[in-house]
Amino acid sequence: MPIDWEQECRRLQQASVGVLRQCYAEVFGEQPPRTGNKIWLWRRILWRRQAQEQGDLSERAQLQAALLANDADLRLSPPGSAHITSSSERARDPRLPKVGTVLNRRYRGQLHPVQVLAHGFAYQDRTYRSLSAVAQAISGSHCNGFWFFRLAAKEKCRGQGG
Image 1 (cartoon, one colour):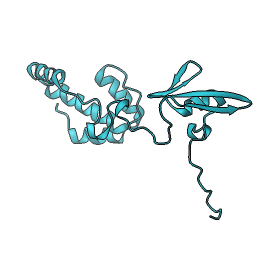
Image 2: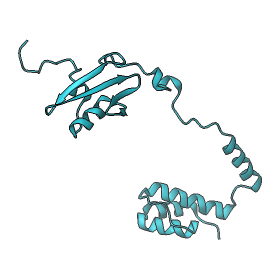
Image 3: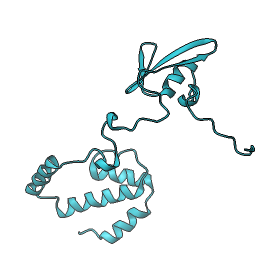
Image 4: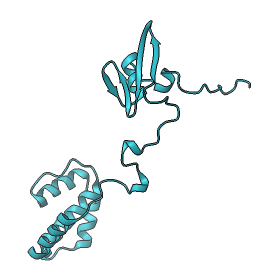
């Protein structure tokens, strides 16, 4: 007896997530992914039931789909205009001193020299990607590297005159 698809669709739409997960397991022969998305579950169940009743793609169509999927040029990153492809193309932060400069920061009575590199910062024989990472290594807590090394411009506090 053919399935009344409208009635089946309504039945699945009204079912709880638990019932849908159980139905999915029956239809696919395996447990569904850990999801609580009712719409996704009932759509997958309906698709599978329809494929079982009316026939899945032909073997030829399945092979063609597999070939197309293998040959597809998938974009793994946004278009060139939306991102920077390498760190060398990245604009250098104007607050940073020239490459080779040594920043000295006295913290808790100890002097901490940090050398500015073209792509990072050298501190105690280790390279860090950001000043904030160096500041965290020195202080043990997260803080803004520009403020820690006193490279940020002093801003006037709001509410204070002139």
